[in-house]
Image 1 (cartoon, rainbow over the protein chains, first blue to last red):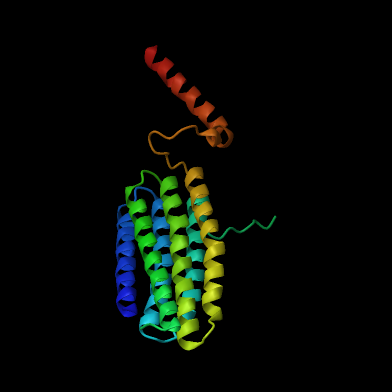
Image 2: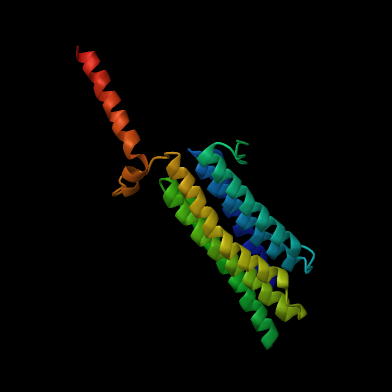
Length: 94
Length: 136
């Protein structure tokens, strides 16, 4: 029963990721794609939690933290690129 | 008959299922809504709710099933709860400042005057000048 519910939830998350992928490919502007990529990362976090319950292991729980941090930093870099045109700004020496 | 632990595990699985349904609804919002700003409204708020429900369900499941209180899942919940609104706000701000247009039928745009007021006046003057040249 629990196994069935978890697998159904996994399928629903895959559906959500596929719909977000449509927005990544189609998206009319760059911020659309950035937001859709952020959503894909956030959904992957939940999917990893479910996989870790289904396989009955605790080994994947570190991946949740790392994926959360990577998705956040990636979105910050994207938004800075969209706003300023560069990612790392250097002040001139003088 | 179910005992109490199995009942709590079932509740955790149902929490995860509710999270998955909210996530699919948010993905449909990302497909159907008209412009970046409304789409980010769908993507950040409800996706955050779905992740919180899912990770909390996983936390309860590991707690009851294995007797294992996972610090990593709690940290993941706190981290997603803090960072998802920040990234949504930053992407929206970058979108507005790089002049992604609003959807048709949007209401007042009060920020436009403040951010781009001088540039708008310059553009209007250039358009009037070219119109005058064409007339002459």
